[in-house]
Length: 240
Image 1 (spheres, rainbow, N blue to C red):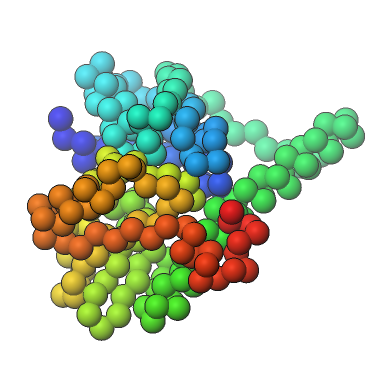
Image 2 (tube, rainbow, N blue to C red):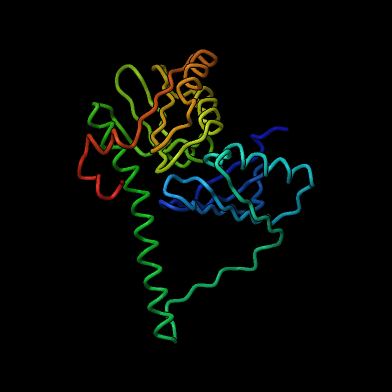
């Protein structure tokens, strides 16, 4: 199986959900919607919508790839609901005849906006954290996000950091995947570092870090969310 035939383009992220468009060999084949049921992003419920005909083996490969690279922590529990069909368009509206329904939808918008803002704030706080360490930082382009799962780039005269930022927990398989991706990136002569920002890391994260550094000859860095909060107390209330 060649997992790199699958590409997941993240379209939306909030503190409690993520949405991906799925491509197989360059063709749009479906969507994946994740809902995190706990504050630490474990116990994930996924809605997988396949909109193109896939062979049973390809479908199995897709599910394996979701478990291995998208699910934050497979060992903690997850559920994938699988739907096969076709897109029948999009319906959008601004006016709601029923005032109660309108208020409910307006409230939903406010809550959704808050969640989106919180997810964006995590990345903003991460940017500010590394600026405080005298790195030049920028949000990664769509290319880095889609192909390598990198959210932020940071560099100084000696090294370049490829940072994945998670508001909750990050799983072992995702760490391995991103490290392999960073090894493949050829955009600098500086020392490359695969960096992970998260609230929680796997129990054997340090053993994994040492193993990956030895195997791939690349430095791996972990930054806990509390470090970011301690360096910028103004984020404590919104990111805790």
